[in-house]
Image (cartoon, rainbow, N blue to C red; front, side, top):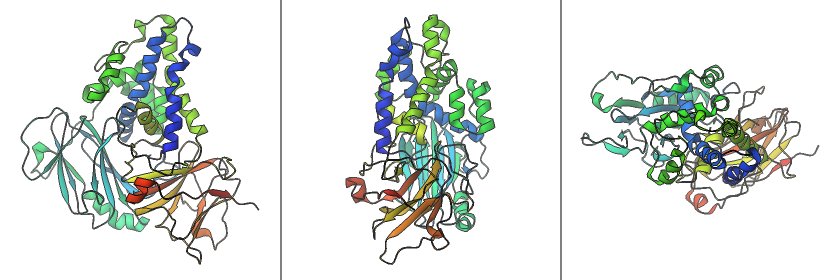
Length: 468
């Protein structure tokens, strides 16, 4: 769900930035300016569309938490790159009618993070152990246009958009810990409309609906519970009409005015139905091919990404400003990513010989003494297939980290073994099973040290192929 690194951003952004330059290869007498604007708008709107597709797949009313009571496994396909470290509690807020009160319980000194993302995937607030502590707390979340009197004693948090996505994460140390301790914390997360502040029973808001919900894409979404597959099914008209509807509740930010004015020239405008019939036939053909071209470009970026050798974390994750290409890359590769203050993501896709990682081989990651990831909370390594999903394995182990029962070497160093078959009973505690195909790894560092965030002073060790 949330793995993307600085090298990925640089690579993907470079490729995405070249898309308008490809227009001459796609069309002959086509209105090339229209096609270029449409491509820019597609990239611009991608986070907004993917966020709402994620809302739809949840099939829940607004302003209600949904709690994940177990770790995802290899059958989970709703989002890419889920973690196996925390239990999620997620909710989509609709602030269009009135403010919503968020209640966070005492987490008993347990690490938790409750980030608030606007509809564009910018993290505009983050609560929890790192920022606000672990005692019980309440906040009133208000929409961009709301004006009124708020009760005293509750801090207001202003959202840039009416739709807000909360994806809280609470540290889980074992399945038993999740069942007996973390689930009780989850139950203490509450949402209530301001008008029901003092009521015990809270009336849920109705679900938000858009015209796209009758499309083939949404049928695919509900059947496969796969947001990316649904995105691929959206036609150009459906995508931009959907985007235009979403822009009504989630208007562009002030910094986006210049691009929004340009998009309006071709019918991409809040509340407007987008139709290809307003363009000549060759332009229509080019626009019909536009979604698959942009998606294929993103997929190409996925396949050519190499190891993240940038040690200093990218502090712009979750705070994108007008870097629409980076924002789109995060949304596509790791929707819902935390800001770097809460989690830093590193990765492995190649070994020391620059060969793709593949489970036909055996690998080891060696951490020197006192050189494990610099986390104030905890760290983990998770294995994914090429598409970004967890892979089936005999021991149902999808991640490994400092909360695992790791065995350290006599000198304090640590070896993690990544391979398909067991490395031997004496090493199984440190074994992360791999499929017999290409795979990649995500290193998550929760609440990284200040020094690492500022200087990138920790260097990720190489992953080395074991020569038998």
